[in-house]
Amino acid sequence: MTLTAPPAARPAAGGPDLTRAALSGRRRFTNHLATAAIWVAVLLAVIPLALVTYTVLAKGGGVMSLSFLNEDIPNSYRREGGGMGPAIVGTLLITGMAALMAIPLGVFGAIYLNEYGKQRPLARVIRLMSDVMTGVPSIVMGLFIYISWVLLVGEQTGFAGALALACLMLPVVIRSSEEMLRLVPDELRQASMALGARKWKTTLTVVLPAAISGITSGSLLAVARAAGETAPIIIVTGIVFSPNWNLFDGSNTALPAQIFRNASQPFPAAQDRAWGAALTLIVIVLGFTIIARFISSRFAIKER
Amino acid sequence: MASNDTNLTTRPSVAVHAPGTTVSGADSANASVMQLRDVSVYYGSYEAVRGTTMPIQQNQVTAMIGPSGCGKSTVLRALNRMNDPIPGARVSGDVLFHGQDLYAKDVDPIQVRRRIGMVFQKPNPFPKSIYDNVAYGLRINGIKGRLDDHVEEALTKAALWDEVKDKLRKSALALSGGQQQRLCIARTIAVKPEVILMDEPCSALDPIATAKIEDLIFELTNDYTIVIVTHNMQQAARVSHYTAFFTAEVDEAQERHGRLVEFSQTGKLFTNPADKRTEDYITGRFG
Image (cartoon, rainbow over all chains, first blue to last red; front, side):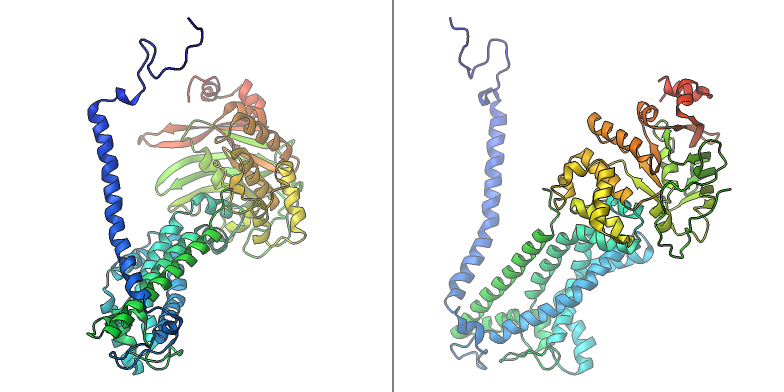
């Protein structure tokens, strides 16, 4: 007989059995079933994502080159070669301008709703309207801008596209920013107030910095979303085949519109260009997302 | 009643009020910085606290004790108009600060809070660096001079300097709860208020951190007047010079109102209470 017995998997007589074997068969089965179900769900969710990425890479990768990013769009869909230069310029300018209009306005709107308006009737109306606006189809927004702006100035311009995209982004920015501001603990506002800060100062120096990382990611998701909008661009910006750097003068074009136009042609050259444009657009959106991640991690509240 | 040297109206008054200014007061030994006269606080039509009359003595610690829901925090928050943003909150009676009614029409609440600071129940440092937390109040109030010196002075007074001097640029959220609370005190005293209101400052802290804060409160009375709300009777007995005992009473309409039962010197209140309800509470028969 030894004094120190080696630890046993089996308990001493009368002690509880802590091994897995002690579980009932039904519980073990349920556990395995749940694990399997989760894995199946993950795989199902990944399949479309992977397929889209693979297809766009495989079909668009072939035409991708520096000249594709640079060159003008051929006037004839039938012609081989050419590039998407004008559409890339258009996408960056139009989306950039839309972001410049929608993000500040949206963030200010969110500040009003969460810090000042709260449950006042005006704030409730704005909240309701922006929820309704989120549901407006992009083609309707395109037609709205066509009637209210394009007909007014008399020509299709890149700026009209930016207006339409800004209108689509605005409600998303307002609502996501408001949610982020709502997450800022009230204790911080009170602390600032107790130090003798005025409300605008508290909002600017305490509330906004605490929410900025969430606001940034929300806003850039809206930008990424807008960068892929097709219908309003086709309706209000027209089309060009060489880059137009001026948003306020003359027609413009953007990648989603080019994808639509080229993909609906029977000519292989046009279809290749559509795939290339799709790949370019995905990379641009990926770029936005990476920037968003980077910015929000820079501003993120560091715990350590 | 008191010499009125503090201007709280919206007209800018940049000068920092030096703590320790003597004010000729009504009360015998010590001057009272603040005076509550028949103060009631309402939330909408509900009268949360009814008819409170008590002084706040200069450079002394005044404790407010009482069971939950007796309105002690509500009264505390009325002292620097922290109830203002609550919809429907209203104060009747006079809250006098150097003889000036804090709820008079032309009084600017910002000026009030600048002179009557507050430390909260839960440590609530800003999600900024330790340095920026302390410097925040100085910056928003446009306090001139070397910021570094002011920050060091405030942290030293809050007995935190030695623990954080090597990591001023680190996030305040990395500090322990007790350190965070002392940082909040440092942040408050950096703007040199006259009165510091503390709303159960130790309730989220362990006994060692609590002891540190209590020592600190005692130190701070050299420069500041302190009003502290606490659940903990022993704490009130340990740190305060004066104690106000509040309780909740139910009126004819079955509504609960907070009520000041007794105000006196702490030693007297705990050893020889004048009111039966106080005696019941401090001997543990109720509450």
